Image (cartoon, rainbow, N blue to C red):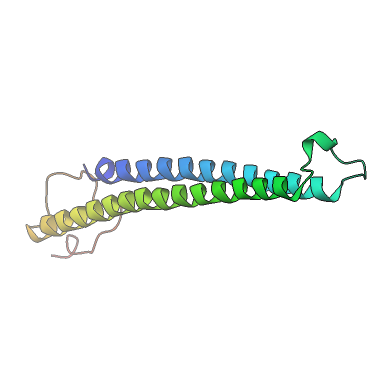
Length: 133
């Protein structure tokens, strides 16, 4: 019973973490590409850069693009905050379940070394009490 009891929230935590990591990485890459395009467009004018229709022509256009990038970064910050909270919930679940397993294991050892359940001696983590009565 102990392995699935602990493994399930650990697997959920892993899935949630991977999903959030992928989302954040994708968004940061997109923002970085936008910043690169903005800086390339403003420095390459007249030097064989992108066509004039693709590059901002005025400081107001540049400012508007920077504000859009800033807004995306703010939204990303909120996503990261929410992700962290969700991941922390799973970490808490894992900790609670590990505490329950430890209490159950201690209670089984206190009841006489425990014959039932578990079926394998705890994976080699014996305290030695069973071998030397």
